[in-house]
Image 1 (tube, one colour):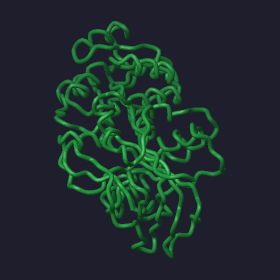
Image 2 (cartoon, helix red, strand yellow):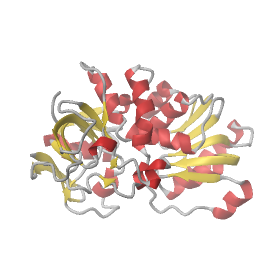
Image 3 (cartoon, one colour):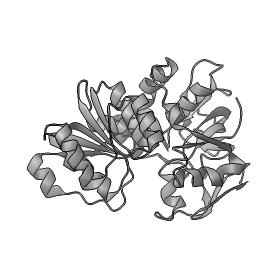
Image 4 (spheres, one colour):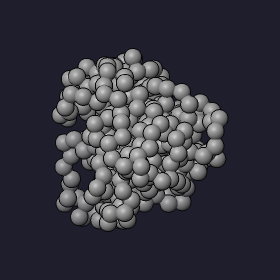
Length: 345
């Protein structure tokens, strides 16, 4: 089968890989229809995080092609969403809502198949894959369904960890696809005022359309200086940190009001928490990889009912042969998020 292959930093191409096959009775093979490039993939692409040559990618939706003997809830031909982590749903961590820490699970592409390819073997298929009801979904709907595999669910996780509730003033640090998803997630949860930190006009516009009421283009100390008077010197009720750098985390903590939470979902690189400052102001930090499988049912309902359209973050499209350009477009900020069209329903 054809799949994206990470060769070395800044060198990702489409090539041949062994076909995805059933290995365990709990496996399913999913034929990929749509996949996309994640912001976390860029850490590997840039060489900032080590990555072994081979398959890459973890966000995809597709059609069930093969089923292991023990799979009971899926049928061939089902359209499914695959969370970026596979999980058994029964271990203590899963039972406590953190499927990304499943004691018997793991992550794509660590199981051998990357999400950016023609097919993927999905372990623990019954408790990992979520079937999409209905048929004849529009292109717009398919894009939004794809975001539920990771990016929108991750923005939602940031909002949940920050304890966003109705009437809150919320700040979102980061204007990538996750940050914009965080804006939409905060709006969905009832935030009254949403301050989006963004320096790019196209992203500022989408942030406003997703529910941002204010835009702050400054970064670092200047961003803190801009937001402080906007909140009468108090700070925001909830902060979403969607970048993962030391500066973005510092900014998020400084603009948080005393007693509030920072929800962080940016993969940390060079982050050191200012514990003394957090102690003095009782500011908490909570986050990590989104337990997508837990969030999927409620988010899927809202997408299917067209109450939200998170697929709008996908503003660049190509096919597998253009996978290298899909990465480059995001790396060079010519794209918010790159969609890769692989197959058809």
